[in-house]
Image (cartoon, rainbow, N blue to C red; front, side, top):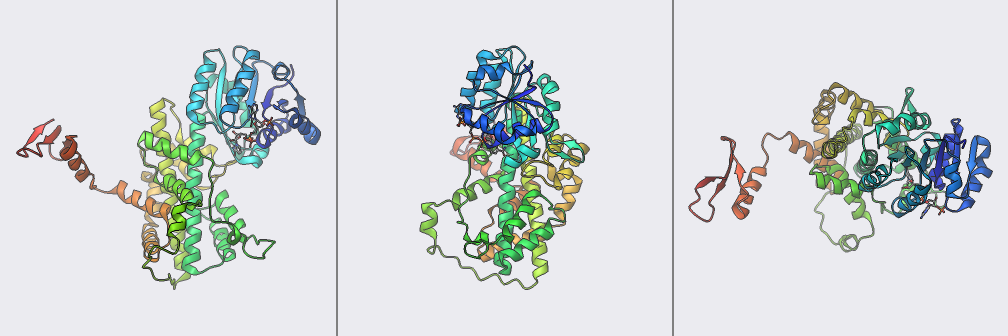
Length: 476
Ligand code: NBP
């Protein structure tokens, strides 16, 4: 046995991850269900490092130094279970199985339980950054036992992205914590993309600007607080001209956004935990609305608008308003995502350090951004911070843009530009900061029809009013 780490599943992600390990000096055992992929990796990239190819699972496992570290990078779901089942007969006490695919965290909890019972470590690890990240340095979010991280962590940290010399990889927490955090990362990515798309639409509709002109605005934004991978690629995409038609590329792409499911999982979990993640939810629903739905067909050209054209006179002021509204909405979306991590951490006993999560997202992953430094700093100031928006830096940053935010959201409503994520983020902001909410009326209604009781502002205890009787109040 000579290999320090093994990768099974050599499609785009596994292949690049294996190359990344090899380029970093590790001897890498490689395996794939169909042997052709294993062979082609050696043929195409054998010169990048030391690979130990195996055709059978038995040989693959035998080629690994103990405790064995096997990274599984196959299609999430049944394939992951199938691969684990094939590996199990050959693994021994203390060996580590890493699932680096996009597993749903309840599956990871289940698998971790099953493997722990057999004396094995199971590490559900989020890996973000797509194909290129896998090769050049992804952001890595490993869960599982701390004990497994002691030997696995240094290898993962070595191949991860680095920001200011700091690896974008850290231990997240037990069992499903790593995949959970990766799921929320993807949810935040949905929200971020939706907000950027809304900003683009606002600039398009408000200014009548071309894609190329809007691309220049995004490029300019990328030099300030909004600097991020997603803003950078937005500028790039908007500048791209379709070679076939000569039109702006974005104008020839069908306006239907697809999804693979991580946004949906994030929203479902937000509902389960009762955490309002409205930015992520609106972004997920906005994709669903865009899809070729019969509702959209039925509504097109049919529903009344009662709007007037948006005729912006002060171009620069408008652009600045959109920028500030985008930044504020983005803070809300991230704040909500971190609330979700905190709630799950408490629910599952994961003890996740939110500042450390923001730190590993600074590089390698899709939501990498300058702004994440500010989030890390906020949680360093107060690791129990109940609301990211309440950190002094974010409180001030959002306060500076709140008038712009209102102008943009109200302008969008007046002119019929759909901004679900901008609008819901502002509604959340106003809701969470409200002295008093109309929830009092809802609780009274609940007591009326279901005797669900209520608490009072002026006295301790729970009460019920005899609504269908004499309307006297009873202690509950
Ligand atoms: P795919 O998700 O397309 O999976 C293909 C791989 O799974 C192949 O190696 C295939 O083997 C193997 N496989 C399947 Br399908 N069923 C199998 C089975 N029953 N037994 C053994 N192997 C089986 O590959 P990918 O796009 O490289 O993604 C890998 C993982 O990484 C997925 O979980 C995905 O969600 C995740 N991912 C992450 C990112 C990211 O940014 N982090 C991006 C893309 C994907 P074969 O060659 O023999 O068919």
